[in-house]
Image (cartoon, rainbow, N blue to C red; front, side, top):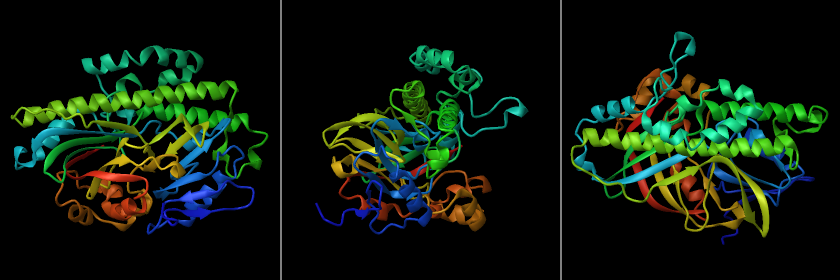
Length: 408
């Protein structure tokens, strides 16, 4: 192992921080946020920081937070189970139509995306009448959801069933990509949608209420936590596990609908290869590290156990990578979940124009209007630098470039 694979930050009364950020910018606010988290008494061993690190709400995006005996709901965040799924098809670039706009609209019709204010009636980002496959997947989630809502009836008034198999907004996307051999891949990025957001928000609030007496002693009120053994800890672990399953089902429904849309446009029959990867990058689970069972919260990080396949998307005009984990124990077997933003959405909208967006995405069939400027490639770190910084965490198996991109 090269001694310079990570940078070590240490401070008094704080867990060490190991950062895989060689050659990648890290904003001072993100460092400060990491240092606040590292002060929590239940951090196990050290924090691991990925090269796409940037300031987040509550805790830093691109960080791996191992804990013993406690969980911080704001570290998992509100996009619980957000992640990626990718499938390789037997099609190649020349099988696709010359003009890709028909393919893009077929996918847009197959999967609800974006959102409209519900005051105006129906939200275009939700199903009016969910199709049969949504019902099939919901049937696997319904019983546990009932248990959850029996305890927390306020979760009934969320978008749950009618959000299953829908994309959402922001950086969530569906893409048709080509790899280094011109093979066609379908890749998409989404999470647990409205219901996951409501679960995250509810438990972050409960943690802050539970700690009312001690909250002033925390470095940041968003570091409020549940102690293992408490009722809210158990309820949260159950709710978060359900939201993560919802997110996985959500991606599977969308993937099957996108593949169906693709087969309507491309008349040549095709198969999907078993290189399907469905991985979360905002989640918590029990794992064994350094000989002990701990809770690992990955906020904007992907599990990269030895041999495990993962997906690291770039921005909408850059490349994306299918990777294989190297099982680097120092990083708690993790890698980055993308390129990472270099500026906020607001800053990007101030700085760039629609013309900049058109130029940056010239080779992609996608929306090019003022509402997606915050997703412009220049608002993200250089994905090649990010990959170089984590060469000790993952190896690249495929490099993909997108030719169609659907955003909400």
